[in-house]
Length: 188
Image (cartoon, rainbow, N blue to C red; front, side, top):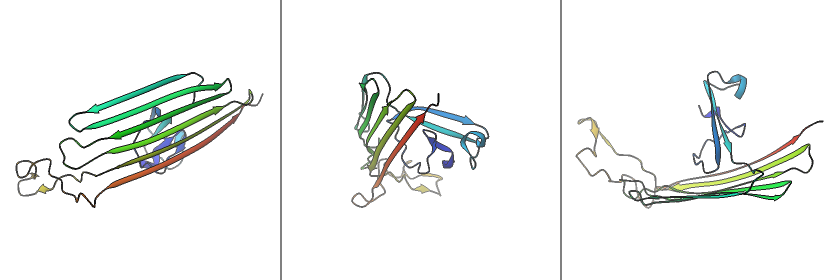
């Protein structure tokens, strides 16, 4: 159920974009989740933990090329210690992709996420992060079904790459911006 998805421990009411370029880990809780995820959950919960700034330097880049779908995708992940009390992290994604075997359809993505960890005193830690994601393209509406033959029309009647939308009219676009601020004070 969409009500059972949490991002960094906070219920995610949107659940609109499934791009995970800044995901650190995914935790799955099976069974009755009320004791962990709160009232209204059904048979479990999924917690997505996003990337947070760490106390070490690293820089990573990953690229993907797809030939059957003309895909180009680059994901970056960089973490930098600014001072002994300040760390920052930056993630990004760029993707241009067609859909393999289908005419005109595309799946393009852009995203950037940043996080900062500040420790002004031994007892106080402040974490802030922000993520912006845009997913856009020309959607694939699938193929018509032939009820007499009991099969899709692409099984022999028309080519499988035939597009059934209108190229200059149809589109999909979703944007998501999420920011969180977390402050922790440890009493002595």
